[in-house]
Every structure is written in C-alpha cells, then in structure tokens.
Length: 128
Image (cartoon, rainbow, N blue to C red; front, side, top):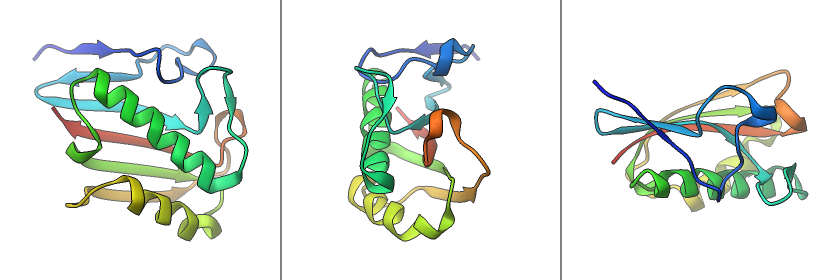
C-alpha cells in the first residue's frame, strides 16, 4: 500500500511547522489532518465564534479534499473536537449546512484546549 501526501496553498499549512501532512491519500481514501477555522492567508483564527470557525474549518477541509480529488460529498468519517460542548448546537447547524447526506459516521468530543485558541477542530476521512 503506497501513500501520497496532499498539499494545497488554499488551506493552512501544518500548525507551527509541525511534522504532519494536510492529508494523506492511501488505498482510495483521503485522511485529512485536523483542521480549524484558520484563515490561511493571514495564519490566524477567524473572528465570529463557533459558527464562523466551523464554516472556515469546512472551507479548509473542502480545499484539501479538492486537492486530493475528493470532496465533502465523499466523507465517510468525521471527528469533531470542541473546546465547549455547550456550543454543539451552533456547530451542528453549520455542519448540517456543509455536509451533504448521506451523512458520514461521526464522533464529537469536548477537549480542554485546541491549538492557536481555536474553539473547533475537525478531522475527516473521505473516499476519492
């Protein structure tokens, strides 16, 4: 099984130069590293709270999936990490707008901290 790194300038580079790929393609699947609401042009988290960050997160994921020859319509697994599960409803409303049916398998977790002060981070697996 070979693997191929995916990179696009239309999404944030690895956080603080950390040693990971935006995504890896292997066996017809695309494994996207955790993405957040970071504006790749300026390298900072977008303003506007959970809704704005969730939309930008999906913009970043969509750009990476496109570079890999995939898309949000091909998601099979999603993990959502949130700084505050009290904001689940707001995140979920954006999620429902951005992720088409049939919906992928998903898990959502509250975590104590996310990089760069983000309030949401999402990692996905999609098919090509």
